[in-house]
Amino acid sequence: MGGERKVTSRAEVIPNERATYGTEKITPETILEERNRALTYSFMEDENAFGDELVEALKSEQAFAVQSNADTVATTIRYSALRPDGKFILINDLHIPYVSLEILEMVLKEQADGLIINGDFLDAERLSKFSGRKRVSFETEFLLGAEVLKELSSHYPLVILLPGNHERRLTKKFFRDSSSDEFGFMFTPDPLYHLATGYINKDGHNIKYHDFSNVIYYDNALKFGNVIFDHPDHYSSVPGGSIRRSIQHFLSLGVDFDVAIMGHTHQFAEITELGRIGIESGAACIEQPYQYTTGVRRRSTHVQMYMRLYFDNGKMVSYEKVLPAQRG
Image (cartoon, rainbow, N blue to C red; front, side):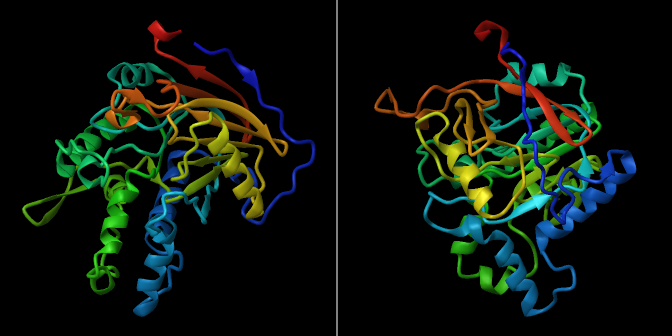
């Protein structure tokens, strides 16, 4: 297990209009209220949009994920109204069905106030333009993901679910299809949105699979307390290179934060950039074949891990890196 390390906040904090550290104490009632708000703006930013405006709102929400250039970063950030307190578990890059069962078992044994899943919950292998395997159907992945989310949401009082580049594969595929202009206003091609609502489709009918009332899905990078959680498309093989770029990007957007944590690289890195702490938080999956080229590793070290984050009145004050026992 990695040692606990203190997180030093900046002496000066400039509050922004969206409540820098969240305003709502976390209760079952505020979780449900925030969940409904998040699901609404994951479909469209303007709740009063209609007609052609609905189409534009949907496309605007997904625009950053549709670009063909993989070297992109999110252009939108969500702000949670909830004020985190206590212990939260952070996990990312499960790549279901390729999740590490050891990591999953460890996470299900933790006792904490909430769980944050920071992207690539699903692998979307069949939708990849790179993978030559494509053995697992997306429907199978989705149903397995629903089972895992059911277990996690039954164990934790609050689960925050965020998208990654692998879930955005479906969005990209949908918007590359010319029919999206005709049908895009009817629904969102976001698998995690549908997963979080608890519905699955059977024989053309939507069936309520499970009540995920304590699962909040945000469709983009999230500012939760004084921390930004992000799972971008851009990647650097140099540990710390990707999170350094993300910190610079969010500062350029005028976001006020102390810590940025990102998934995607499967690496672990801790850096300080422009007075902010940046962390690349490893992965909760087994190593993937695409990490190798002709038998030679083409990515840097794959670190199988999860994290414990400790908050005090909206601010993350310390964290721990947790490794499987045989890697400790």
